[in-house]
Structure formats: C-alpha cells, structure tokens
Image (cartoon, rainbow, N blue to C red; front, side, top):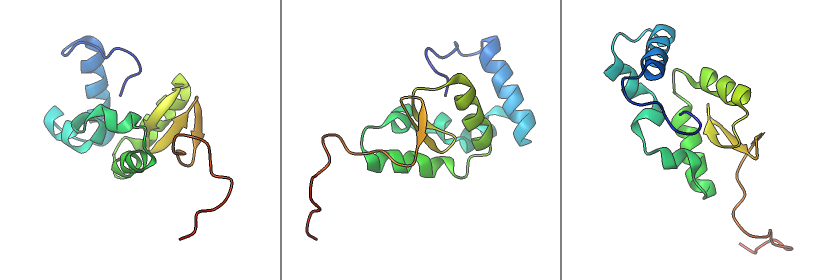
Length: 112
C-alpha cells in the first residue's frame, strides 16, 4: 500500500514493484501474486480502520503475507504516520501494540 496517491495502473512504478515482488516471492504471474497479498485484495480501509477490532483483523490478514517483512521495513523507512503495515500498527509514526478505542479511558474498571 503506497502512501499518498498510488501510481497509475501500468506505470513504471507499478510494473517495477510487481516485478520486484514477483522476484522476491517466487510467484510467476501478477494475478497469483495479487491474490496472496491481503492489501491488494481487501478494501484498503481495513488497514486504516478506526475500531480496535478492525485493526486487529487487518493485522491478522498480514500474518501470512509473503512480503510482510518487506512491507514493515518500507513503512519504517518512509516513516508512515498511521495504518497497519507489515502486520504492525502505526499511530503518529510509532509502532504500537494495539489501538485504543476513541474517547477517554475509564477511571475505574467495568464490572464483568
């Protein structure tokens, strides 16, 4: 998932990244590659979700991704400000364990 506006389909940037991904993963065609990378086949909004449950879902999608480590490294190098990248959650440019729900935290624990 690129940060900002994605390159136009068929552009050099898209073609180069697909070729690089195919070389790194060993896949022989773009369709096979696209079907194994979750961010290419799921709604991108999943990876920039607001709810903690949706964020955990996005992180789970990344667990089996063949380019997970490369994605995370790229996000760190680009200093991505937010979203799930390589199975990790970025909030204000920092990797955090989990997303807090909106609003102030409770002062006391809720009885179960």
